[in-house]
Image 1 (tube, helix red, strand yellow):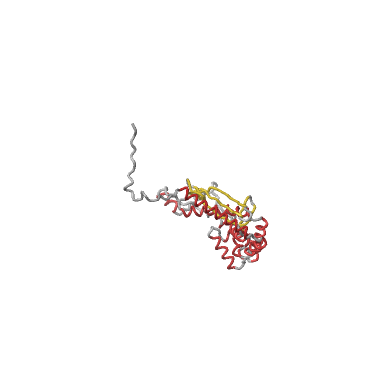
Image 2 (cartoon, rainbow, N blue to C red; image 1 turned 90 degrees about the horizontal axis):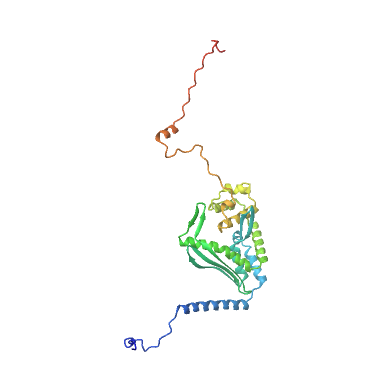
Length: 306
């Protein structure tokens, strides 16, 4: 016996006789985005080949930028490792070098967030030479403090943590696509700019101390590090302090790595505990009574003392 299949009644459908357009699927949307990215990459490569960089002009632009004191102050960082101070170009100098070098695309991209951590990609791509540096890394949403690890829940704190960790990898990617001798020349020019613009006036030294206060560093700690009073600070010491400040600001090191921490003031007498009774606290607060001395006994032979 043949089964009877019910056919849908199309007489009640007002769009039954109309042409049905192809409905976009999720794959079609993804393909459209992929085609757009491919077109952007091809356009960037065509423009880079049509307008190639001039290495001499690019180096001149980098050197000219490094003569600005505002850039030179944050262009170098320094941190201590194994008792040795390590100095290098910061992310600020790397960004300026990439912008002046030309035909370089760089940035940080957060791929996903899952299970309390972010997967981040830092990249730098020289479109003209097709040289690319990519670093994919994990950033747990945890901030390590002296009191222990603390889980981050605020989206702003998570964003700042990811941006801070991504800036370090981005700096390494940019330095990987720009020739090393160009970066070394830029670092040398920044050091010369810092020496020439070192402000040893009382106002400049006061601003320097104020800048370190937000990291918990006092004037006494700065003087102890320099082994001299603040008024006698040399220009070379100011240059080194600015490198340390850039390292603290970028999170490359902490204040304890550079400055000796002041020990807490010790109390002469411990405070009475809360568990102590009233009688014990009164006895501790009362002045000590002088002990009476025993009277001297006369001599056994009865002779008087002269």
